[in-house]
Length: 251
Image 1 (cartoon, one colour):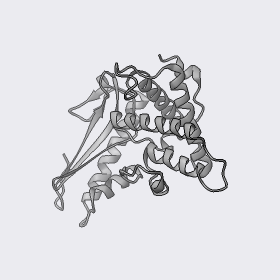
Image 2 (tube, rainbow, N blue to C red):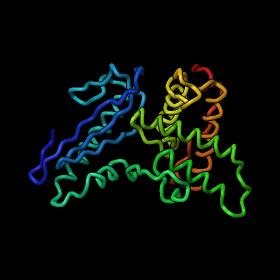
Image 3 (cartoon, rainbow, N blue to C red):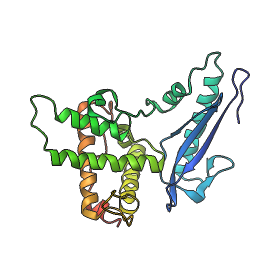
């Protein structure tokens, strides 16, 4: 692991794979002075058998392997430069520098949604808060509950996969971004079908039905369309065309 005369630190990478899956997402682990931060680095659906745990690299000569390894190298360079400073700052600052996102908070209520925009929870809470503003048509409670149910399911997806879903995760400004966004869509819909458990209603552990999954993906698309219109994705155009055929065929 790299070391600095100014600060002793380590940066490692691992493939976070949900139980029973053959594909996972890349995560960086940075340790310094007894503290550690762990966060995803934007690559999902990496085959488990393509991950070299000793070298911390994706094996093979595919486009995905090349891009993932380039990202790993970029993170390593950023960490080296960060700790090469005389006053490197906190690990949370370093994480934000690498990901471009504020580390995920713990806020759960819509009252604070305007300042909590990281991750799928922030997007959904901010969307629901916007729909409750004075002068707008009131959102029905059953509809609100439906969006909250999808939000909670996707939060569990983030936890299980070690990823953070933001509006930028679905960017489609380039062919590479479109490819990743479509892969992410498939990954989410597969997880909803095979892993997600509705507490109290699905004790056997089955995933969501095709129709329920379709509604969940439509609600995600609605939030992303709203986020794009509000400028929460910056200059990005977002992938929002989730179809029933694409999702339903995975069962």
